[in-house]
Length: 167
Image (cartoon, rainbow, N blue to C red; front, top):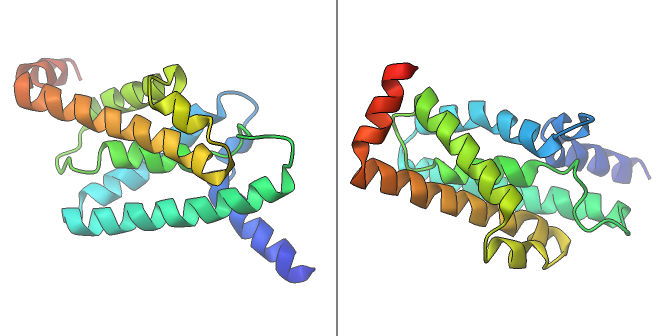
């Protein structure tokens, strides 16, 4: 019994984004905010290390979601589980080495947009159910964020330059 309690508490700490998912309103938004310091720290590493760390975050996140969902038999995607937002946002900014508040903020807004609106296939992934359904929709929202940010930076770099003048 003690082993189960310890396993649950570790999973709870991870799945709720160091308990940010228990905030009474907008847990997904606060979970994404928790990802910002992690994303900044990741940007200081070489890309291969970032990829390994984000992959480890996804695997550990899937485990923690599975443990939490075992307890929540009736709820497909409890709002307090936010490790998926943390992994998705981190994935969305994984290839940007020079992170500043413009990229972090615009990435935040884009990620939350894709996570809330759920364009295809985000919605279909969300409906899979289980720990994969909880995680994969946010990873896809992160991939959309990455594509849009990279596209703007490549095709319209003046957009970010103009935004930086105001920050």
